[in-house]
Image (cartoon, rainbow, N blue to C red; front, top):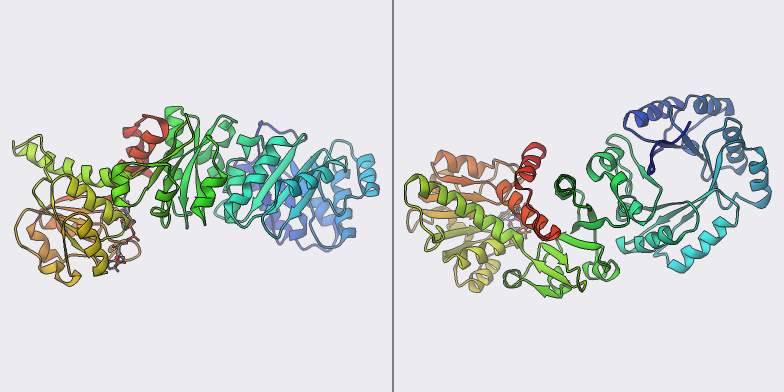
Length: 506
Ligand SMILES: NC(=O)c1ccc[n+]([C@@H]2O[C@H](COP(=O)([O-])OP(=O)(O)OC[C@H]3O[C@@H](n4cnc5c(N)ncnc54)[C@H](OP(=O)(O)O)[C@@H]3O)[C@@H](O)[C@H]2O)c1
């Protein structure tokens, strides 16, 4: 059985029973794997003949591995795999003595031997990994494999270094959630094989095979691919990869966008400082700390005190911080008001927010962005926030007014106000919550909700019933992502395409 592609996509299969392993092999084939790693040690079997039956049924080329457990059974399994001409036999460094390696090499016909080592217990240094690679190479293996248990995402950097400099085929994997980028970025550093999981099964550090093929399209990656990603913690929920990767493909831009699970944002930018790490979205809780990591910060982002986008200047490698949330939310509101003005024959050049009473709920990251945007457009800003001290601090920064949260529902000094919810109220799973009662919504000309999960919040449904103009957080989400993509790519704005992706998939 031969391998078809240049980049080999390998599904790692663990199963308790033979039947499960057989069905996993079939599933791997269906999902487009080129190769399966059969972790024979994960299964219970009483006779070696059961393993023989399994190996004979393999529908794809395979790696047979047997980690831990009895050395005798391990060698029995590996010898059997050689007899059956299985494509790859993996043997742990501790077992791969001269005697064993000589025996296996003499026995094999076409099988290739992989010698592997598992490194745990802390941040690995380049020197330690380099020494280990020398040891693995000296066994005479055809390929070597390094599995490293990392603590921080920055620990993956020495693994990339090994991939770039190793003189023979190296399979490298960093384990755990923080090791995921070892697979997603491996091909950029020369990895010839990436590992993934099947179906919905998630193993920390391994991406699903389906997303390797359909979202990240790693087979197109090369050493010139620019790296982008979202720096956040947690990061698993981020929709960024589902949006930016297809947009790179659509615009034929050689880039990849990955989740970066970051604990210490300063350390992250110190370690991944080369020009190929070209741009970042910044999420919770790093938006404020990230300001300090930038060499330059856009004045609006500086005033807001938070960046949600960082771009590395290709000329000098300096990091420049921006806040695309602000323009995204405010322009979405302006465009909706302008549309109404046009249909009423009242269009003007000035911002339709200018002079209006802008009632803002929330004083967190999104709230700060909206408050500064509204102030910049000449609105009068009134802020309600559960934590009143936070509301007061923001009101002071934008020369606005803070009022107690309990007064929000009764607040009605004039008609035609704008209501902007930038708090998490109404967000999944609390979709029955709303910051303002339906009865109070009659005084607002426009109601905006930054919450975008769900798309149509209770606040927006009730505002529409009260005949206000409604603007969804999805519109803000699309616009902030478009703003980021433009900054990342130096000007590309595939608006129709990105809108379509968001509306179809999210
Ligand atoms: N559409 C977009 O593109 C976009 C962009 C950014 C954010 N957002 C959304 O905007 C919302 C806020 O995000 P963020 O980044 O500003 O988060 P954040 O910095 O954590 O701030 C959360 C805000 O929500 C308030 N809040 C949370 N639970 C509350 C409750 N039960 N009752 C009253 N107030 C509550 C907090 O008030 P306290 O100060 O009292 O804690 C704070 O003002 C989220 O739903 C987020 O998904 C949307």
